[in-house]
Image 1 (tube, one colour):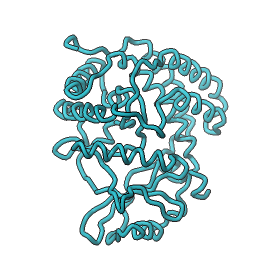
Image 2 (cartoon, one colour):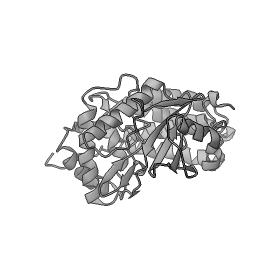
Image 3 (spheres, helix red, strand yellow):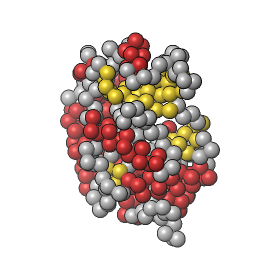
Image 4 (cartoon, one colour):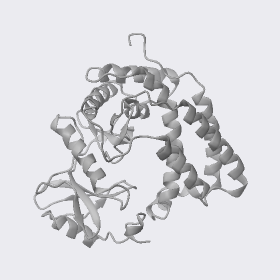
Length: 329
C-alpha cells in the first residue's frame, strides 16, 4: 500500500526524513532513533546545533491540517501558561510543515522517567496540572477536532468490525450478540450533561513523564469532551484504591477548575467506548506493517474469545454503582 492509502509509511525513508528536516533548516548529526509510536512515526535525533529533538510525521488522512494545527495551538497555549506539555517548535511562523506529501512537526526532546500511578504525591501534582489544563481548555472548544460521541466510538467501530476478517466464524454470533448488548447499555448510560472542553484526550500513565514534576506528552488524540475523560484512565486497582486516587486527583484539580460530580457516571461508559474503539482501531490499521509486528495476538482466536468475556465483565461493571466523591465534596 502507498502512503496515500492512509495506512503505510513505506515511502518514509531515512533520506526523505533527513531531507524533510533539512527543508526547515534543521540538520541531523546523529541517526534517527525510532520511538514507540504506532499511529504516527516519531524519531529522536541530535542536530548540528547540539540540541536533541523529536520529529513526528503524521499519519496521512487521519487529521486535516486544521485539526493538527488546533492540537499545536492548544499545546502552545498551555505551554504559555507554564503548564508542562510537549509543544511543537515554531519555525518561520509555522509549527506544521509539509514535505513531499508528508506533514511533520519538530519538538524538543524532553526525557523523563515513568509516572508512578501508585504514588499519591505524583497524583496530586497531576491533578493540579489537569485542573490548569482544563482551565485553559474551557476557554473555547475545538472548532475542527471532534467531540467524543457514540458515533465515533461505537457506531463506526461496530460497522468496521462487522466487515472485519479477524473474528473467527465460530465466535461471530456470540461476539456480536454481546457487543450489541454492550453497545445498548453504553448508549443508555451515555449522557451529555457536561460542558465540552478541550482535552488531552488520551491521558493514560504512558503519556505522562516525570521530570521533577509531570510532563504531559502526545496530544495527538486531543478533542472536546467531558473533563472526566482526562481523569479516569489514571485510576487503577480495587474500588477502594480508585476512590482514594480519585479523591487525591480531584482535591488538587479543584484548586484550578470546577468538576461536575455527575461526570463520574461516565467512567465505566467511557471505558466501554474505549474498548470497542480500540478493537476497531487495530483492525483499521492492520495493513500498516507496524501493527502485525506490535500486536500479533490480534489475529489469534484466543484474543477474540477473551473479548467476549471482556464484554460480559464490562456489562457487569456498568451495573455497579459509579464511583462517588468523598463527603467533603
